[in-house]
Image (tube, rainbow, N blue to C red; front, side):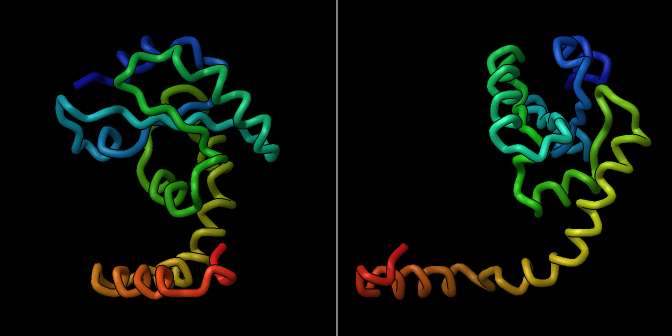
Length: 140
């Protein structure tokens, strides 16, 4: 398994960005087959600009890295990342402060998110069957 210095070397082309590692690597559950989840923090509100940055980065890193743009992640993934990450490039305090608003938003939303999840596979299958039987005019 790679250490943080190896990751910094592999991703040195991103040293001008704020970059964190998360997922199984950050939680120390990674094994030889695990990819390394990387989030680039752009601080961009414009999704198109985030996509441009992502396109610039993709393909430059070795295949073992799964690189994402933090601002493009769903809120529940952001919340999970914020709870367990390691800084690759950037100032840990600045990154933590940036995450504060996302942490606050997640704390306001997590109960609604969890309430709207299916309780079982059976419940999910029943919902899919209802959707399949619904008239076409109601489908999205």
